[in-house]
Amino acid sequence: MKRIGIFALIFLVLGPSGCGELRYSEISPDARDFHPRKIAVLPADVAAFPEAAGSVDRLFTEALTESRWFEGILGGESLAERLRKDEELRGAVSEYLEKLTKVKFSDPELSSRIGALTGTEAFLVNRVDSWNYTVLDDKKVGKVGLSITMVEAKTGKILWNAAHNRVSDYLIVKPELANMARGLIREMIDRMPH
Image (cartoon, rainbow, N blue to C red):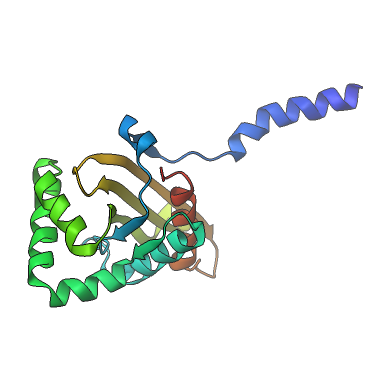
């Protein structure tokens, strides 16, 4: 009996620390009633970490496909190709992202146009916040950080904002940042409203 009590105490103390939460997550009340069938993933903003280009877009598409929540997924790589060819879509996405970044305004007219041009009901805006090797508290670490915004295309409502990161220390062999990102993206997608 005493042994069971000790195990229960250990579980209560250590158990919650094993259940990771996202560093930041905000869900709109409107997300409860919104269940998109088709979703687009805008090419990730990798301006601060260009070496992450391509990897993040591919990994988001993989994670969304694995979730089996959506009938159609227009991934970042496919959408990037369409953006190169379709001037109207490129202009709408560029103007939408500029307003979202500079004045924190999700323009409903532009988001609706993006939805219509991509044939989707929602889209994700992704940003790479960190993708590097550094030293943290005298330890060599690999660090990957991402931010995601989910937008209802028809209305421009921001349904979900999240940010999270992963840090992995190493002595000699550097952890593969793409593998770290894969786990991070899956963790974030698991908490995404759908």
